[in-house]
Image (cartoon, rainbow, N blue to C red; front, side, top):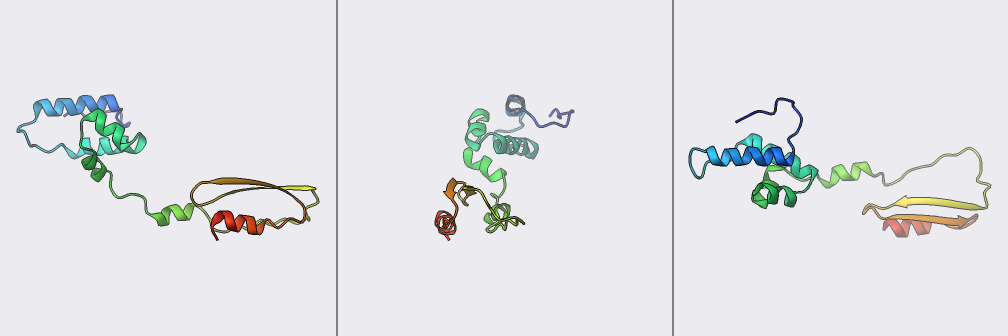
Length: 130
C-alpha cells in the first residue's frame, strides 16, 4: 500500500482511491481493512461526519463509529464552560442602561438590556436552570 509522503491528512477522494485499491488487491474475501485506512477514515469522520464518510467510502456506519474511539466525556465539556464568572470593576456603573450577554450549558444565548436598579440575578438563574 502506498504511503502518504507529505504527512498531511488524506482527503476523502484520496482515501476512497486507497480503499478501492485495497479491495481489488486483497488476498482473500474477508481480509480486514488495515488499521491505517480505518484511522484515516476516522480522522475524516471527525472533520466531516460519520454518515458522510461511511457513505462515500462504502464502510459500515457502526464500524466506522467504533474506530473513532470513545466520545468526549461530559466532564471535559464541562471544564470549558465555567459555572460562575466574577467580574470585578473599580468604578460603580453610572450608565442608564446595562447590557448582559450570557450563554447556558446547551449553547443557548441571551442578551439582556436593562435600566439601572433592575435585578438581573433572577433572570440569569432562571435561564441557566439554577
